Amino acid sequence: MGLLSSAAQVETAFAASALPARAASFDVVVDATGSPTGLDLARSLCRPLGAVVLKSTCAAGADFNTAPFVVDELRVVGSRCGPFPPALELMAAGLDLTPLISATYPLEEAMAAVEKARTKGTLKVQIRVCSDEAAPELDTSS
Image 1 (cartoon, rainbow, N blue to C red):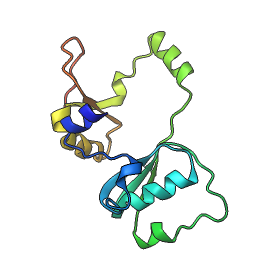
Image 2 (cartoon, helix red, strand yellow):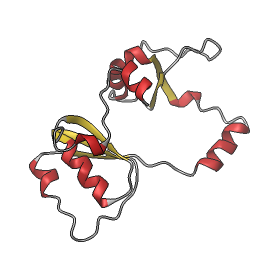
Image 3 (tube, rainbow, N blue to C red):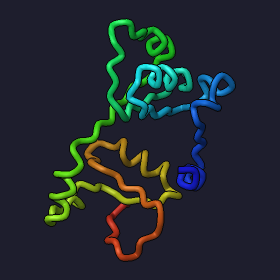
């Protein structure tokens, strides 16, 4: 993770060392803890108008306080994975998913990839972490 984040010029921090000094200082915070405590920590680290990406499911319960999300105008983005084994079996059987990829970018152009992902009609945008000459290139000009 460190190598990927440094190559993309993205700052990362572990929760234990991030608070209180880094409170409300990240544009995007990804919570993969699956716990209400992790969700609250992610919210604490996210700057106003930032985004909290939930990469897990947690049942916060009736005492969940939404006020900090509203006051700081945070965007909450869900990211759910489906069952991997059936999907991998389909891919191994030859299911071609490349038509779903609208564009491919090298890691150095990650910001352009994010902009492409925001455009209407874009399904998936692939970011290559390393050069792979054997893989087919997709048109990134559209």
